[in-house]
Image (cartoon, rainbow, N blue to C red; front, side, top):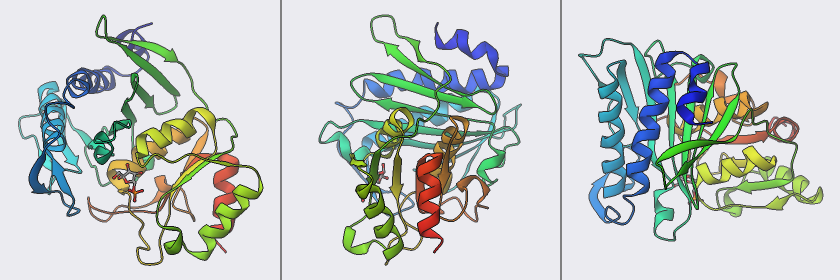
Length: 297
Ligand code: P6P
């Protein structure tokens, strides 16, 4: 089954938005060689932007504008929310155009992460999200989408035909024994260090690539947990609430898993500003419950 056929099961607007991402992902997948120089600019987090970041960002913003149904786009690469005045629709979109872009240098998988709100307010809690998707640029280019209540489904790009073909339907996160944790061990809080030590005592295996989308995708298929915790000198952690934590927590929850900041569901966190960061634990329900048991102490 092709992506466009599978999307018949969701509202037409959601189909339009997911297909807009799928369309641009083909251009992005083909652009890594030509756009990997530094752009000489920094994003709202003060991080150096590659040409890739800005190029992928503009491709996606233009594609969402082209749909005619998107009113606001909040992007990790833009300082402010991009208002699309002539839009006839009211969708609000969050994008991390190229998450993990520093991994392009070492040819590791990187991703595009998208959140979709039909009422247009991208600063709503993640629980108000209607749909989310991510693209993973690895040995395969895969697209995973979720619409509220309709499960999580994965497609792979057939580069011979340019079409996304169903690879796995109704994915649920199994109880697994993989863990990945960001941050320097010396910066981990005692609670997080005790959690990781408990995982290792229970034979969890370390898998960490430095690319959130790739590391989450591994947990989506094999279970366990990906975490980027609060650190001693960074209580808010590193990852972005709107652009990374919310869409991936939405997908995790739709796959019968969970996303937490260590004390509560990410989807219940009230964003304050578009640049909010958050500690993040994504994984199977049992492992996330164990994380919260340690982190709440
Ligand atoms: P560190 C990539 O820069 C990113 O935002 C996520 O994709 C990834 O999980 C994390 O940062 C890696 O951070 O500190 O391990 O390099």
